[in-house]
Image (cartoon, rainbow, N blue to C red; front, side, top):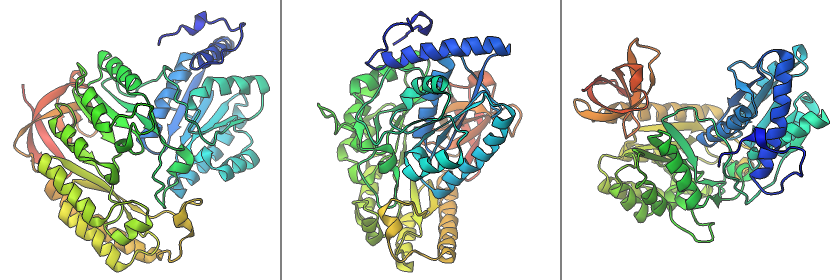
Length: 480
């Protein structure tokens, strides 16, 4: 959907339907930005800072697309006319980072009173956070949450008209607004949201409370977006959702994630398909078969374990056992022996004993993950786990964490070199900052490769001979 906002009649009635309503406000803000830029004798600028997951990164691309459409120019410095923080709240330190940055922004705003500051994302869905910002950070101009990021232009217009803080937080929604602009970070790869929210309510996790309940986009809209991206030169997509395996359950005509993958596999021009995140309890035999038969789905699966103890998994409300997880891994590897498995593991969940932790180490030894994101349990107010007794002492958690990290790194250094001395397809992604004349790319299994090459290769899939394994990455040689 292409709309020329300069042609929109801003004197007419405000449209009720989306996305027409947002294009109307984009036109309104665009007039302001143009006028103000002329007064300043330079383009108005914006800076975004994204905290957290790939869902947030994709949201930020949409927010940046709106800002560019209304005439702002992007800059890397926070000394901009408009600064936007897209926040994360999965861990307490993520909140503290934002508060720290707000102190810096306050100093900048004192020097430039016309500067505007906006906060959005998961952190803004917490009532106590919003109240704290309204009370202690009154210089913030716009606050909005995860459900209404598409309203940025409308909220910005409200702020310009009212000249006071605008707060627009929704408790939840079933609405998915399509056809708004987005500014992709890369020309050759892109994230594609297939669903929003989460229904799992793991006892340690704040996400369902800040992202809302699951709602899937229609397969037609998803496929239209993917085909448009492929036509625009995108060769790799990442299908995004809090739990992609449950995609389609909320649709009037439900379809499975396996069916969606099969449809995406047929898109001409597209060469690679990734997805994240995959919940073990919902990973079906149908999906394993679809991955096995796919020409384009990458040989990499991120399958969060969280704990190897069935007792702790039950307390976490994960809805699978250690045995079920190991059975699932066996099925996946039987179908795709070359699959790369990565995972998430939490250390120090309330009540975790030495025996529970040893169960986790046992799973790590048996599965031999290519890599693992390891986390120390972070108490999040508002989750059931935060109220649990028997919180594990910090010194015990630290000792366990170090042991886990050492084991994960040892196994990873052994596993990740299995393709050495073979020629593999590598998507060249960027110029390597650490070696002149080198590029950095990724294999289908997500392992990094550094090789000599010209920047004209970025965005292309090339043949690279893997000369040497460095444990977590390869050094390679480009093949003609």
